[in-house]
Image (cartoon, rainbow, N blue to C red; front, side, top):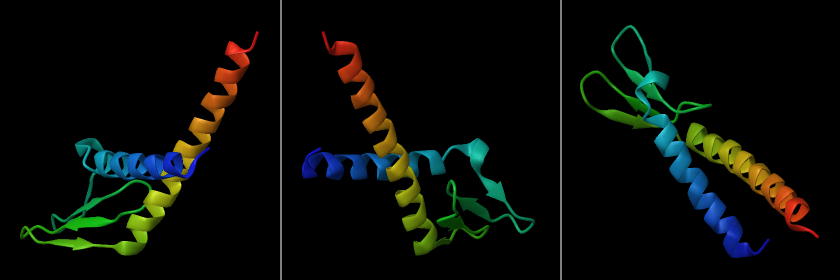
Length: 87
């Protein structure tokens, strides 16, 4: 794959990570009313008073995990596409 394809997959993985993080069913609230957002690692905390906290380690871990998943899915798709379209 070309370098631009990897960049596009990276941007797609960031968009997927942010989109998945804001699904209401996946939010976890603590006893104090704080919401921790992020799948598989928490990267954004919305406190009960309306302020927020950003966790860099969780952010980069989520990007890495989702990027690897998107990359594997893309490679499998390319493999099956070549298999199906070959004469």
